[in-house]
Image (cartoon, rainbow, N blue to C red):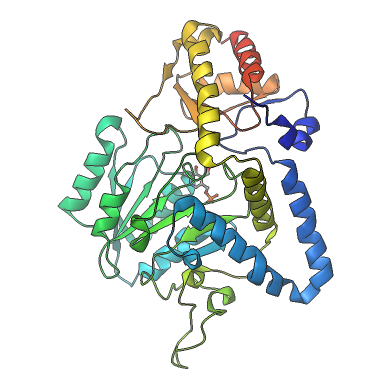
Length: 390
Ligand SMILES: Cc1ncc(COP(=O)(O)O)c(C=O)c1O
């Protein structure tokens, strides 16, 4: 396996002693993203006030094309951007809420941003929440779809891959097939799937929303969240900024606020576009290196399997006592290894003190593999894990 470390020399050399295994959270940034970041600065200096013509004319369309290619979207103009997915969630819901509480069907495995916001909306009487438990994992997709069939919600919101366990929802096409502009909306949080595993959203694209961002497997850092918005769904989000009307102004009656007809209707207002520069540069790097998501996932999967073997065989010491979560019977797995044990937080803290970066979510320790790891890193990691005292 050819090492990809040279692509990450800046981030690796910035902390040479560190063993960074939280690629599922903050993925280290490739060197090309440094130049892209500088390019954003230089463009701001060069274009000054006219910078946004360049951002909207070149940078955003390039980012839209990369996302459409990756997800197999039929039309790149369905993609909108924001600093984080939280902002985009607000806009989707604002397009649906109309005074009476709306019904939302979700899971108990959603990321904190959404879990908190939904709970708060419920407190405020804006939504009525139904939650499908992720466990037992084997029947999650089936139970979620059954809950939809039993009573169609206004919005079905579910992660493609759950952030804590790596459980995959395999019912995207079935869910999308039930969605209608004036009926149920399907919203998929794809943050843990986008560029972590090949995703074909082509069939679902005409009726389902897809959210993700740059911070994890896209290796682009923060500030580069995006939304694919199906045509005809939510033409006029109530939460709106001036970037949402750039392309329209056209047909709207003068008395009404105008919106772009494409995905840009979900845009907000002035934001830092440097994340999109980084994203475009990373995509160009991957293409130049002939590394598509399938190849990256295969590479990281091999390393994850090696780590798993090390843990099971006792090479990683006390971790052998933890339960390795394997929530999906078949198909692509999450890019991190999830281990359940009451000592997860204590292990994480002890590792952190030894400059080994992993993370813990409750009683689940997550070890994330990235393009910048190689076989030797897994051996070093097993050695460090073997020295855990707890
Ligand atoms: C499933 C999932 N969705 C969304 C996010 C990020 O949310 P936001 O963009 O609101 O910060 C994360 C981050 O860890 C996540 O795991």
